[in-house]
Image 1 (cartoon, one colour):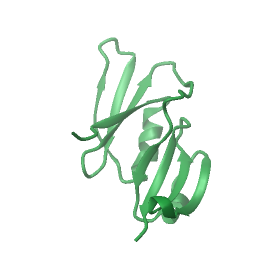
Image 2 (cartoon, helix red, strand yellow; image 1 turned 180 degrees about the vertical axis):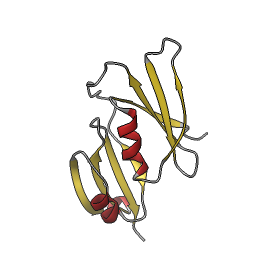
Image 3 (cartoon, rainbow, N blue to C red; image 1 turned 30 degrees about the vertical axis):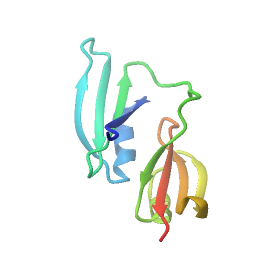
Length: 122
């Protein structure tokens, strides 16, 4: 078993794609629902794990569900990525998490989804 994708509801798929491209994701494919109301665009990492960015016409604000917490992305250098990305909100600045064996930071994407940047500690 492996993770195929995570789906995020977004207000502007193009803006979200630009955000996730900063982590090395690339747009991979898309489709529109039969009713024409929702465009689903996908970005994928080099291993094929995808994020589905679902933009429904007229929907620009989303209630934060209690089941959703964050999306974690492995990066080579948390500090460099944190400084270089166009983040939309800082949740937690870079810091070592010895118990987890990683250096992490948390930022928000254009729609307020929390993204954890993870750099394994050697």
